[in-house]
Amino acid sequence: MELYLVFKVLWWILLGVLLMGLAIMVGMDMGVGALLRFVGRTDTERRVALNTIAPHWDGNQVWFVLGGGAIFAAFPLLYATAFSGLYIVMLLLLWTMILRPLGFEYRSKVASSAWRGAWDWALVISGAVPMIIYGAGIGNLLLGVPFHFEWDLRSYYTGSFLSLFNPFALLCGLLALSLAIYMGGVMLMGRVESGPLQQRARRAATVGVLVAVALFTVGGLCVSHLPGYRLLSAPAPGLAQTPLQQVVTLGEGAWFDNYRAWPALWLVPALGYVGMVLGCVAVRARCSTVAWWLGALAWIGVIGTAGVSLFPFLMPSSSHPSHSLTLWNSTSSRATLIWMTGWTAIFMPAIVAYTSWAFYVMRGTVKAKRVESDPHAY
Image (cartoon, rainbow, N blue to C red):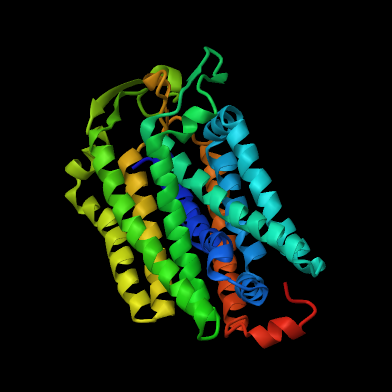
């Protein structure tokens, strides 16, 4: 097999790994934030909830940076098209993520219930909105994004901001939010003392994962009736690959073509269901650590399902299907991918190692008395 082709597929897999890492690690923190006003009934309980993720939430943002950086370097045409056409959505995502650290840092600066209550709601919003946007973005890929290219590969987005939040995209957004709530609830279960806060977190995790199972099922049924994309022809290997020299058609059920061609791929959505169903069982059994890892497995299955369905498409075009971005026409040069692979082989294990070390060192229960007496606690 031609080496360049191998690196293209490798970076498609690595991009999926980064998106999964983002969903698992950042989604867990976002879930705690989204639950803050609902599981924490007193100021102390909310402070305890915030301090369960205090040592990790900013470090987990590295997955967000890595995801954007990987798209920029490995898939420059995708980066240019998505980040320019969806600029308002990107700004909304960034504004809410800027609001998040402000909430952490400023919430406890003033001992006023009104002040702290306002920042609490800011943390709820900055926890829920990014996850909804994350899921809605994946949903819009399955629907197709309205854009096209001119002869010189300048892209033009022809949709509206509100059209991106259509019913199917919102369903996917709520699925992402429900999984984040599950992960956040499980995180609180394992890090807070036995009592009302832990019980409410356990109930929230149970509700979150049950809603996720329902939405994942409904979403799959919807996708089975959506017009999917099929790549009929493209330039031969070794020739310049651009979106202007390919033929793409639409067909109902086309998003299931890969599953029909390779039935073993049905194991990917099965992983999602296994993670969610067994995760619910683990939550009811109060096994928070097992439940967390099963939640990670659920995220891998859910995002993997979307990736397998879309392959080889990265960003289908609903206004001009033949201008869709695929794995074959959107990647960087062979030399760039080789260099990126080398640096990734060095830094990815380092990131996993220091993240694991940080969680190990900061393990244990966050106690209310400790939070109240510690002037450096959130």
